[in-house]
Length: 144
Image (cartoon, rainbow, N blue to C red):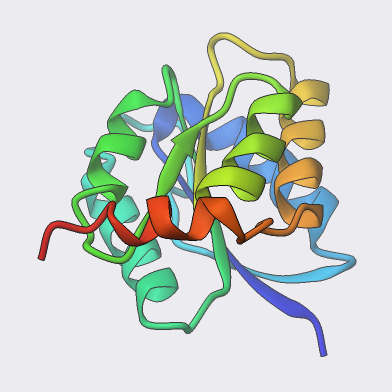
């Protein structure tokens, strides 16, 4: 059975979303929450449903893409059970999984190449949480 991954983007991240989604679709079941064009949109309309799907276990992990990566990350992190890390290089994605047990990442389409976006997604999805000393810290993240 393929692992289930959520993906979403705004208009600035649409092209990268399509590239990452197509790259991952051979090995993962990728649920695309939109947007579905380069027409200007409000990213929360796509991020909230994607984050909810990770939060409730419908999808195991999630990938978000916008121009800077910031808007989608801030939105996703409003969800109590989401730990979304802004990743602009593969090493950040590895550490986000290993040390923070990130269950979503965001990427800045305007600041990374398409090849780097694929590499970030690959590292994120292939890295496990280390637990141990990091577990206590992760347990302290949620406020409520």
